[in-house]
Image 1: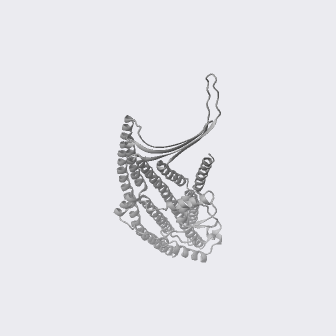
Image 2: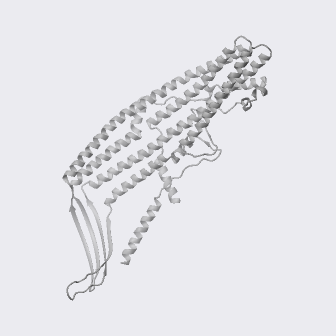
Image 3: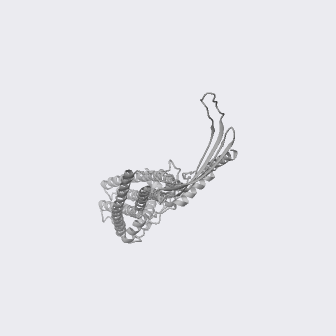
Length: 490
């Protein structure tokens, strides 16, 4: 009796210790002040902090545990009990016996059930694969969301740089036109137009700075960081911007009084050289053909692989249902100890049982439903393959077309820059009027903005194509081990 009680206590302690070791802890990643983050850093932070990824991770752990539950059918089942027995004789002259202790214990083991349990286990293994793919797909979605927000920050920063250059160009024109007006060379209309254009340039700069600030909000949201400290992000190889080079004194409300022709000329020349946005960017051509892209997508797309795993899981479920007609062979070993008034009784038992229990009509309809589910998933796989083909084709065409536009846009920017320089020279010697100069400024500014937009769209298109091809892969097992180690340490 004492040995049996000690055995139960030991089993309880071992089970609780196992549960404590497998406890999962998922900790968010924080950002420190003045950190300089790369795109990969932001993606890692977004994956660890995202709630959808956490839920997918917990579902994966549940699916893994379900496989263990299904496999437990091959583990012996232990039954044990402790009780008190007594009897009462209600006949004349009878009496009541006192209570006596009794102990029972038995072990029952499944020997063979003609493949029912093995099909059941395989079904849950495929469900685990589905959960794994859904986990990876959740991370994949975060990758694209972070990429989009990251590129948007770089693009809006480029817009700010372009608008700053535009302010400097208009400020230089205002000071030069004002000097010409004071000397009687230019009319009042030119000075009014210069003031108007300078005000418009400053308004555009404010709007660009506002968009830049809101793009940071979107990036913080994509990486799920609440009220982070000040930090910066680094340029990418395909979005490599130069640092700010514009004197901030030129952007204040008192610029007109403080600026001189000498320092304005220096700033303008620097701006012209560095606002040539072509030199700030590098881009890579798509390194794969459409056939390679679509074949890669068919092999790696999480949703397609999940549907294929679902089909296999349903096929195993169909096998399990069909095998319900088969019996189960089990073995059992038992021990009973009973203490009575006169003697103690020890009983041992051993046996093998072959039994079955099923409802023919119920199983028939369950088989029909399972077949329908397999056929439905099969049709879904065909539909999804068509969708994947169209998605990859559309994304590939978009990326390639944007790639082809970049060299043409480079020519446009260079031509607009050259035209601006020529218009500046013509205006200074009095050959052209203010309207021609203003058109040249507007065309150059628009060309710079169009080039930034094109590079941004190209980067986004490449990221979208790679997302639809499912090119970004993260080692889920390493993340799982990392979280398990955190749980053990705690």
